[in-house]
Amino acid sequence: MSAEIVKPPGKEILLSVKNLTKHFSIKGGILGREVGSVKAVQDISFDIYKGETLGLVGESGCGKSTLGRCILRLIEPSSGQILFKGQDITKINPTEMRKLRRNMQIVFQDPYASLNPRMTIEEILGEPLIIHHLAPNKEARKKKIIELLDLVGLRREAIARYPHEFSGGQRQRICIARALAVQPEFLVCDEPVSALDVSIQAQIVNLMQDLQKELKLTYLFIAHDLKVVEHISNRVAVMYLGKIAEVADAEELYAHPKHPYTKALLSAIPLPDPNYKKDRVILQGDVPSPLNPPSGCFFHPRCPVVQDQCRVDIPELNEVSGAGIHEAACHYPSDAPLPTRGNGLMGVSK
Image (tube, rainbow, N blue to C red; front, top):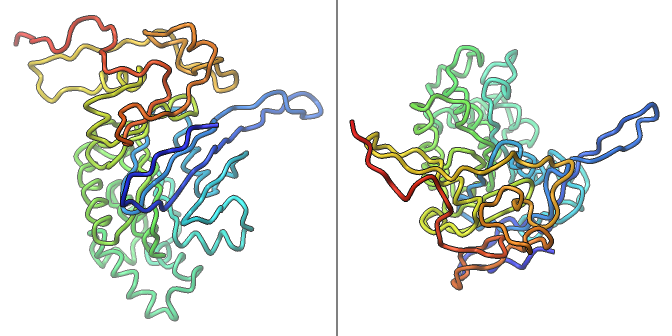
């Protein structure tokens, strides 16, 4: 069982995930019997506070997107609880869940694949309004669609066009407008800028921040770009092989990482100044298979400061700062830098 998370004073919990687990069965043989399981999400617990952005980062395949989809029950979790405004949504039936989806929406990674190419923008944005009975007639629906287009910075003439007539950034704006059509409180943003050009990414991130302030939204922002996550997030959770390795306020985590994996990730962030080079923490080996995760701490086969206890005991997510704002799943959390190929920043001659 994971340790109980300390609630910061004055913050209201909107979503609480408790011991969430998701395993995907692997079947084989003539009879199609289960021969194994992919342990995509392993006993994860965390809270998201109303009005904040929780960034979720980690390597590809660590379970970030699976976690986001489980929270919305687009994928059914294997076990655990998901409490939205105090209600355990893992126990409600599909009809009740459909009603609750008004409050919980998702923005997908690929704006090219998540829009139906045979539907106009009016049809795409009008569909959620029809499903949730949010516009009494066609005239009211069209008025609402134009308001949504204005909200995300698109021209009103877009209403009669098809997705293929838009750029990637414009399509993602349409996806955001579709998610906002039902007036949700909570958005899962599943790598919403990773498929876009770098020049467009900043525009979409700034748009999402403006919308958050204007509409009082709460985000779970899933990404692998650590600089984007640092810019948009209030708190950041680092995920490794289906588990949360570390979670803290964004400023605290980037300045004082405690978990060896977080330190290795942060060392990979490129510096904007080409005259300087930052030493990388080079991890040995590959990420273990979620089919057969290692014993003890999942990170121990690659950890440069591994101890005997790490190979046996599973570390819990515990407070490491004493102030209730920084938790790490590590037996030996430390501010000390990891071994690298050098020391700190090294000047590079032009």
